[in-house]
Picture: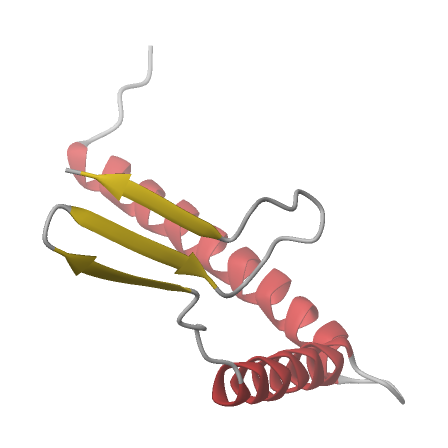
Length: 100
């Protein structure tokens, strides 16, 4: 029966750890090369899509505002509310009168 010394075990672990590091680096380099090379690289498509989405989003946010659809006036025990933004799919009478 052959027994290994603790120093030999440590050296074996270091070699296998170094080998896996090299394998990870090779796979990472191949992945980067695939994403960056070519006539129309995928990383460029992703950057263009993000830029276009942000441009459209910022434009929509800059021009939109929340409408003030509901006004209410209270005179004593009577409150009158008027909805200025009528829902055309479910139209209702736009004036609401409530008594306190």
